[in-house]
Length: 81
Image 1 (cartoon, rainbow, N blue to C red):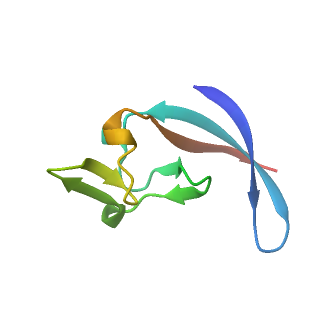
Image 2 (cartoon, one colour):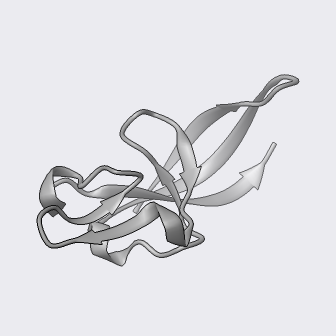
Image 3 (tube, rainbow, N blue to C red):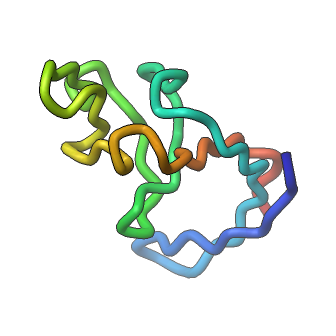
């Protein structure tokens, strides 16, 4: 795990939040996890966002992460400044 500073834009101002970024296999992601999606947005995973397909395998938000060959960036909030 590495500690990274990621800027998150809110409606009112630019906030800085500290996250621990852990790269994990798509099969370890569960509902309630926060991920840095491939489109650059931070998203919280819900049960409806995890799909199991006999053709594509596991998908998150419709993305298979190259059929499981690309690791998912799971985030954990450390502090809010």
